[in-house]
Image 1 (cartoon, rainbow, N blue to C red):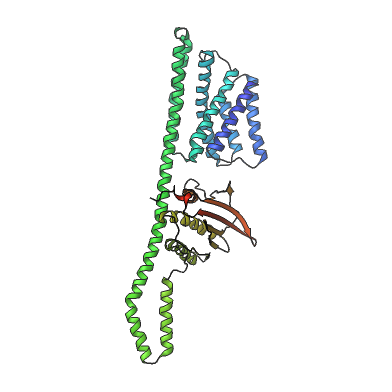
Image 2 (cartoon, helix red, strand yellow):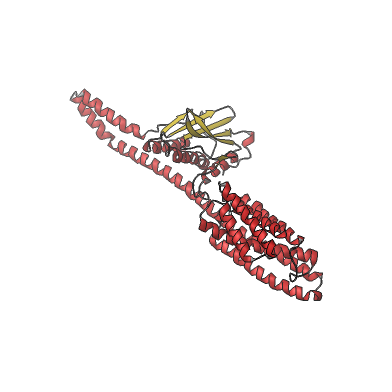
Length: 438
């Protein structure tokens, strides 16, 4: 029976690590899920019948059960399950040694599987849970995000520690009468240090990921601002060209009037008027910098034949910094453009609503299918989840900076699927004094 319990405990640890630390989803087929569980139980029954804990059987059921349970490429699952089986074996070894040192004070030789070896899995699980809560979930980083060199570093590091402790523990077992509890205390501390060193390596890998993410966010924002700046330069250059030729245009009109060619003069005026109209801002929001961003996306939407409607107008300039306006509105409209472009009837609608104490910005856009929203947060549908979805995270950070609120929802309007995001920003007052405008 102890072998079956051993397999089941390992099985639950594997499922926890792969689902929460690698973000792989279980299969939808109940048959395959049931086969995965049955594999674990059969392997445990085999070990119990032959009274053995064969590494080959352990390897086979681990790899097979994980491959049956999760949705992913089979070669990826094979490598992943083998690596996890190896690494969890290292942590389990540390856990067993800790219990032996603290409760038994003896070595591993001649010791069978007993209750304290099973309880070692609880220590192992607590280590994985601590890694998940303190490092992975806290920083929104998962083991699959970590660079390969750090993954290899952890495996090599664990291998060295396991070989060292196997040697030292056997030495203790053969010579335990020569040593007192102080030696076991040192050994206990060294095991804790080994686990802590793995935490440090993993922490370094996570810091590297967060640094790369921040760089990509800044590059994305700078690229967005450059595109808006280039658009303004193009508009300014076109206006200068028009002004440069204005004297010639007036001279041509004067000549047409002198010749009493009224219809030709009217047509010429219309031509000049249409040219000038192209350079004017089509949308006026009440904030000059917000005008630049909104008109830029209006220009892009027109090129992509996306309906772009803005309703409402501000009575005064927004209290946000220019950088924050770009981060907030630019990211929202960029995501709206990408989503709307994939629909049969693409459209984007912006509503500016001003109250006495709050300013509301509501953006709706058509979507091809219902948007995945979890706890009010947009979950990106792109395959590269690490580098996407950052725009909305930046948007949320900006809203929180100004003590505002946001709400995202997936709705249907006249049978059309829409993604709607609503931003509420308090106007400057006592609640805004704590905000730093650097």
